[in-house]
Length: 444
Image 1 (cartoon, rainbow, N blue to C red):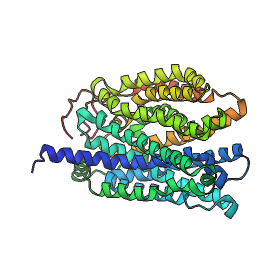
Image 2 (cartoon, rainbow, N blue to C red; image 1 turned 90 degrees about the horizontal axis):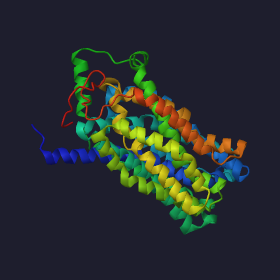
Image 3 (cartoon, rainbow, N blue to C red; image 1 turned 180 degrees about the horizontal axis):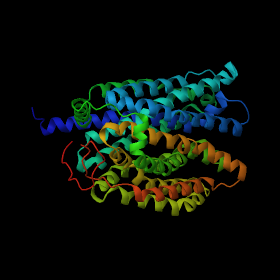
Image 4 (cartoon, helix red, strand yellow; image 1 turned 90 degrees about the vertical axis):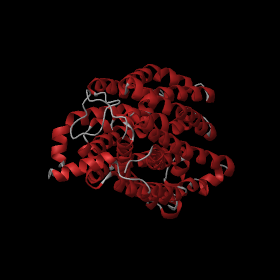
């Protein structure tokens, strides 16, 4: 029975919402954690504010250690059991772990058990995130029309910034309402507790969407051909070139991401001396500006291709990183402008990754290949960026360190980008790598 246009449009809207809310939940936690790191460090860690903050940033980084393990486990399950099955489990684990952070007793109450419990819950978050993003990106890409995959995929990243901004705004709102003393005592916990109901909303949305037609077709073809599932060895042997390219691009993507978004509040407050409120709302202004342009950049990638936008982003960030950080050091207004400039230059990467990365792999290994390569690279270079920047500034005394790390990451991305195949407007219905000469399909 054919599906009418209104029904198809409604299904696509539900798919976008269900995919994006998991990403929003993940980044809600990041926003709450990074914007409340000074409160978390004083509540759950011993030592001076500088030492405790470095410990808290290190705990933030620990979750990325298990993301490759999450990718190794969730990816193959997603390629065998379906994308929807994995996405339902990962959002429950993520939201539950974030909620539990909000009820950890203080260091004064239970001693070293406080940072130990924080580390356990961060590891659980990292394990679930190992399947969440790659699953959501694959799910979104396989549902979207081929000629508008960039536009629809951009809403996954819109969810990223929406979740991060909501977490940041909540932390800022509670800080301004409750005051510093109450925030240190108990107020920092409130935003974490909101993750519980947020996860239940996400689970409800994901329960009302269908598995992707592309996955169902590929699964049926594999059953009819009696084709066994790909092992990890065969996956890496047969698809290592695009997996390496993706991993190198993710270095550029996530070093910039975690340096610009996650580390920024700590950098502005601890290193540049801004007040808590100034260090919180300056990056929020930049993120809200980025959100306005993400769908536009996604649409533009459907017209001119993904690679052109990546070139613009990587070159622009490399050229502007040092001037932008110098501008941040001049005060609150300079921080807002500098963050906004770097954020706008980062948008062409961020808006297109959900359409770019899944299209690099055939359907039967798409989830696993994306999850393994993306999470391994993010684990090594992305989530460690805040702690690395803080440590290197401490060692060198140079406040421009974050600019230099961003520039190095952009050089790595520029070295890998020529090897990326342009797949804009190309069909994902395949059993082999996408063919750049294959005509685009107008629907899903």
